[in-house]
Image (cartoon, rainbow, N blue to C red):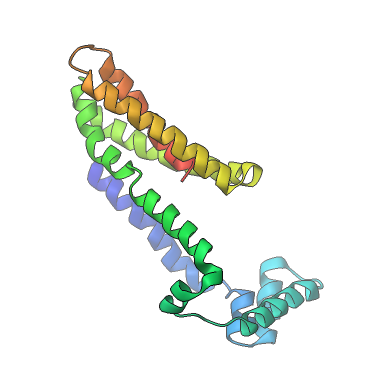
Length: 201
């Protein structure tokens, strides 16, 4: 079953490969990059139907004017630019915490935790699949919550809840040989951690 599940990801790639030539180019790409206003109008009509789309074209023209007045900076110039210093710090902090938040360790050790919890051997791969499904569903949930609460709130609350879950998980893994029910609590914490990761960072 697993080879088929792994191969199924190629199905969506095949669908994209076959259908992509029939999609029109992006109107903004045609107008900004290619400078072809007629092709832009044609793409807009194909995407949004017939009608007056002058307002959309004006918006793209404003975007083009803004891009031409903006100077492209090299990496070293971005680092040296004082006005971009805080944005750079925020970006580096978010990306570093994302890499070091512990999600890879959770995925790596989840199989062992499931095995220690005395689950049947044939159930463990499906539980691992359930962990991945939890991340997928929580990411979809995040897309609806981000407009309501904002990115900053989701980041702070997500990381706070993830830290709390990791602290509890460390405790349950340490005590799993003393209390039989700690194994199951560890499994619940793994699922919670993945959900908070998907909703937050």
